[in-house]
Length: 200
Image 1: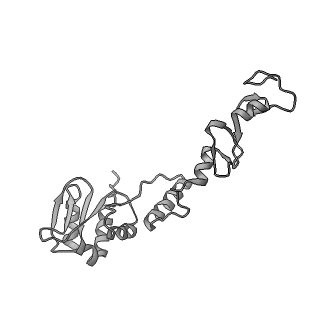
Image 2 (image 1 turned 180 degrees about the vertical axis):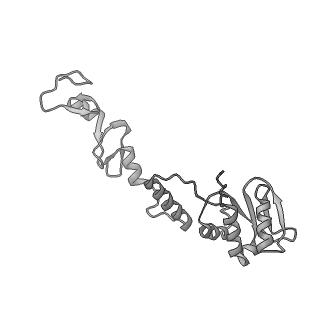
Image 3 (image 1 turned 45 degrees about the vertical axis):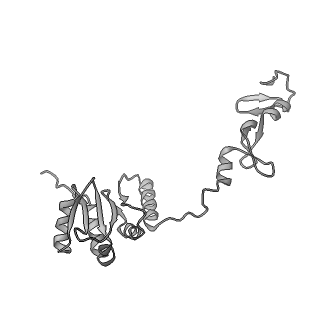
Protein backbone atom coordinates (compact mmCIF):
# COMPACT_ATOMS: atom_id res chain seq x y z
CA UNK A 1 0.00 0.00 0.00
CA UNK A 2 1.28 3.48 -0.88
CA UNK A 3 0.89 6.76 1.02
CA UNK A 4 -1.69 9.06 -0.58
CA UNK A 5 0.59 12.03 0.07
CA UNK A 6 4.23 11.02 -0.60
CA UNK A 7 3.56 7.78 -2.53
CA UNK A 8 6.05 5.83 -0.39
CA UNK A 9 5.31 2.19 0.31
CA UNK A 10 3.81 1.79 3.80
CA UNK A 11 4.90 -1.31 5.75
CA UNK A 12 2.11 -3.63 6.94
CA UNK A 13 0.65 -2.55 10.26
CA UNK A 14 1.82 1.07 9.89
CA UNK A 15 -0.97 2.42 7.66
CA UNK A 16 -2.75 5.48 9.08
CA UNK A 17 -6.15 6.42 7.72
CA UNK A 18 -7.71 9.87 7.35
CA UNK A 19 -11.16 9.78 5.85
CA UNK A 20 -10.82 7.38 2.89
CA UNK A 21 -7.11 7.90 2.26
CA UNK A 22 -4.14 5.97 3.67
CA UNK A 23 -0.96 7.68 4.87
CA UNK A 24 2.43 6.85 6.25
CA UNK A 25 2.98 7.95 9.86
CA UNK A 26 5.03 11.04 8.91
CA UNK A 27 2.51 12.37 6.38
CA UNK A 28 -0.42 11.66 8.68
CA UNK A 29 1.24 13.49 11.59
CA UNK A 30 2.11 16.44 9.33
CA UNK A 31 -1.46 16.85 8.08
CA UNK A 32 -3.84 15.36 10.66
CA UNK A 33 -4.44 14.82 14.34
CA UNK A 34 -7.18 13.43 16.60
CA UNK A 35 -9.70 15.40 18.63
CA UNK A 36 -8.88 14.89 22.31
CA UNK A 37 -12.60 14.81 23.14
CA UNK A 38 -14.29 12.64 20.47
CA UNK A 39 -11.20 11.05 18.85
CA UNK A 40 -12.31 12.21 15.37
CA UNK A 41 -9.60 12.74 12.75
CA UNK A 42 -9.10 16.48 12.16
CA UNK A 43 -7.18 18.33 9.46
CA UNK A 44 -4.26 19.86 11.39
CA UNK A 45 -4.69 23.42 10.06
CA UNK A 46 -8.38 23.36 11.12
CA UNK A 47 -7.64 22.10 14.62
CA UNK A 48 -8.41 24.27 17.65
CA UNK A 49 -6.04 23.96 20.61
CA UNK A 50 -6.88 24.78 24.22
CA UNK A 51 -4.48 26.45 26.66
CA UNK A 52 -2.87 23.07 27.44
CA UNK A 53 -2.25 22.32 23.75
CA UNK A 54 -5.02 19.70 23.56
CA UNK A 55 -6.54 19.44 20.04
CA UNK A 56 -10.30 19.82 19.48
CA UNK A 57 -12.54 19.52 16.44
CA UNK A 58 -14.85 22.48 15.85
CA UNK A 59 -17.98 20.75 17.23
CA UNK A 60 -16.34 19.64 20.47
CA UNK A 61 -14.69 23.02 20.97
CA UNK A 62 -18.04 24.80 20.51
CA UNK A 63 -19.82 22.45 22.92
CA UNK A 64 -17.13 22.64 25.59
CA UNK A 65 -15.99 26.25 25.35
CA UNK A 66 -18.86 28.42 24.17
CA UNK A 67 -18.96 31.11 26.84
CA UNK A 68 -22.15 32.55 25.35
CA UNK A 69 -24.08 29.32 25.99
CA UNK A 70 -25.26 29.33 29.62
CA UNK A 71 -25.22 26.05 31.54
CA UNK A 72 -28.69 26.71 32.92
CA UNK A 73 -30.44 29.30 30.74
CA UNK A 74 -33.27 31.35 32.21
CA UNK A 75 -36.51 30.10 30.64
CA UNK A 76 -39.87 31.69 31.41
CA UNK A 77 -42.83 29.52 32.38
CA UNK A 78 -44.53 30.31 29.06
CA UNK A 79 -41.44 29.27 27.05
CA UNK A 80 -41.11 26.09 29.14
CA UNK A 81 -44.76 25.24 28.46
CA UNK A 82 -44.24 25.77 24.72
CA UNK A 83 -41.14 23.55 24.68
CA UNK A 84 -42.95 20.73 26.50
CA UNK A 85 -46.02 21.11 24.27
CA UNK A 86 -44.01 21.00 21.04
CA UNK A 87 -41.95 18.05 22.28
CA UNK A 88 -45.03 16.01 23.19
CA UNK A 89 -46.67 16.77 19.86
CA UNK A 90 -43.53 15.81 17.97
CA UNK A 91 -43.27 12.50 19.86
CA UNK A 92 -46.94 11.73 19.18
CA UNK A 93 -46.75 12.78 15.54
CA UNK A 94 -49.31 15.57 16.06
CA UNK A 95 -49.21 18.71 13.97
CA UNK A 96 -50.59 21.61 15.94
CA UNK A 97 -49.77 25.26 15.59
CA UNK A 98 -50.31 26.59 19.09
CA UNK A 99 -47.84 29.27 20.05
CA UNK A 100 -47.08 31.93 22.62
CA UNK A 101 -48.29 35.49 22.33
CA UNK A 102 -45.65 38.00 21.31
CA UNK A 103 -45.02 40.87 23.66
CA UNK A 104 -43.09 44.11 23.82
CA UNK A 105 -40.15 42.88 25.90
CA UNK A 106 -39.35 46.37 27.16
CA UNK A 107 -42.48 46.28 29.34
CA UNK A 108 -41.85 43.92 32.24
CA UNK A 109 -45.55 43.78 33.19
CA UNK A 110 -46.30 41.98 29.93
CA UNK A 111 -44.17 38.90 30.73
CA UNK A 112 -46.59 37.97 33.53
CA UNK A 113 -49.48 38.22 31.07
CA UNK A 114 -47.58 36.05 28.56
CA UNK A 115 -46.93 33.41 31.22
CA UNK A 116 -50.56 33.35 32.37
CA UNK A 117 -52.10 33.28 28.88
CA UNK A 118 -49.99 30.29 27.84
CA UNK A 119 -50.35 28.73 24.39
CA UNK A 120 -52.81 30.20 21.91
CA UNK A 121 -54.19 29.21 18.54
CA UNK A 122 -53.96 32.60 16.81
CA UNK A 123 -50.91 34.82 17.06
CA UNK A 124 -51.13 38.27 18.61
CA UNK A 125 -48.72 41.02 19.60
CA UNK A 126 -49.40 42.67 22.97
CA UNK A 127 -47.91 46.02 23.89
CA UNK A 128 -48.30 48.33 26.84
CA UNK A 129 -49.95 51.74 26.70
CA UNK A 130 -49.52 54.60 29.10
CA UNK A 131 -52.71 55.64 30.86
CA UNK A 132 -54.42 58.33 28.82
CA UNK A 133 -57.79 60.01 28.60
CA UNK A 134 -58.47 59.34 24.90
CA UNK A 135 -58.38 55.52 25.07
CA UNK A 136 -57.27 52.60 27.24
CA UNK A 137 -57.09 49.86 24.62
CA UNK A 138 -55.74 49.99 21.09
CA UNK A 139 -56.75 47.16 18.75
CA UNK A 140 -55.81 46.62 15.11
CA UNK A 141 -58.68 46.65 12.62
CA UNK A 142 -58.85 42.87 12.19
CA UNK A 143 -59.58 42.25 15.90
CA UNK A 144 -61.28 45.47 17.00
CA UNK A 145 -64.86 44.15 16.68
CA UNK A 146 -64.10 41.14 18.90
CA UNK A 147 -62.41 43.44 21.41
CA UNK A 148 -65.39 45.84 21.44
CA UNK A 149 -67.82 42.96 21.96
CA UNK A 150 -65.80 41.58 24.87
CA UNK A 151 -65.36 45.01 26.49
CA UNK A 152 -69.09 45.77 26.20
CA UNK A 153 -69.93 42.56 28.09
CA UNK A 154 -67.09 42.52 30.62
CA UNK A 155 -65.49 45.96 31.08
CA UNK A 156 -68.09 48.55 30.11
CA UNK A 157 -66.89 52.13 29.97
CA UNK A 158 -63.42 51.30 28.61
CA UNK A 159 -62.40 53.47 25.65
CA UNK A 160 -61.06 51.64 22.59
CA UNK A 161 -59.08 53.07 19.69
CA UNK A 162 -58.37 51.46 16.33
CA UNK A 163 -54.64 50.96 15.95
CA UNK A 164 -52.40 50.13 13.02
CA UNK A 165 -51.15 46.80 11.76
CA UNK A 166 -52.67 43.37 12.23
CA UNK A 167 -53.17 41.21 15.34
CA UNK A 168 -51.96 44.00 17.64
CA UNK A 169 -53.43 44.80 21.04
CA UNK A 170 -52.31 47.65 23.27
CA UNK A 171 -53.46 47.69 26.90
CA UNK A 172 -53.12 50.58 29.35
CA UNK A 173 -51.11 50.17 32.52
CA UNK A 174 -54.11 50.64 34.82
CA UNK A 175 -56.05 47.89 33.02
CA UNK A 176 -53.09 45.52 33.23
CA UNK A 177 -52.75 46.17 36.96
CA UNK A 178 -56.39 46.44 38.06
CA UNK A 179 -58.25 44.22 35.60
CA UNK A 180 -55.73 41.48 34.88
CA UNK A 181 -58.23 38.58 34.96
CA UNK A 182 -60.50 40.31 32.41
CA UNK A 183 -57.50 41.18 30.22
CA UNK A 184 -56.41 37.53 30.26
CA UNK A 185 -59.92 36.47 29.22
CA UNK A 186 -59.91 39.05 26.43
CA UNK A 187 -56.59 37.81 25.07
CA UNK A 188 -57.73 34.18 25.24
CA UNK A 189 -60.96 35.06 23.42
CA UNK A 190 -59.30 36.83 20.51
CA UNK A 191 -56.59 34.17 20.17
CA UNK A 192 -58.97 31.21 19.98
CA UNK A 193 -59.80 29.83 16.56
CA UNK A 194 -63.50 29.82 15.77
CA UNK A 195 -64.46 26.31 14.74
CA UNK A 196 -66.52 26.41 11.56
CA UNK A 197 -69.53 24.06 11.57
CA UNK A 198 -69.28 21.11 9.23
CA UNK A 199 -71.51 21.37 6.18
CA UNK A 200 -74.33 18.83 6.29
